[in-house]
Image (cartoon, rainbow, N blue to C red; front, side):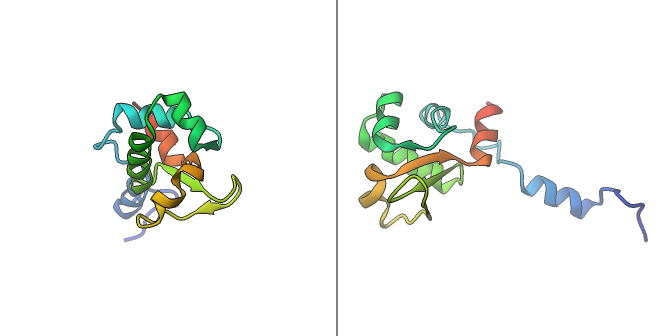
Length: 111
């Protein structure tokens, strides 16, 4: 069966919805506060100061946001994106920089 050009088929709709943020798992209040500060690349120390979160709590929430692909991390400088590695994240976390991803901004703005 042929469809008119531009017609949304079921497979196209599935692809569209697969790229939307998962709104069934809303972010926590702490994660929301972190995302609120990550519209621009921000170092860990400044993020801790602005959110008022203690370093261990901030690190835990950053891990969660990275696992959800809601933020990106940068290390050793603000221009070098670092892939999230759970085993080494603790060693670099407090020297890293962070930025909300497109998905993170969508999640933040739909709350």
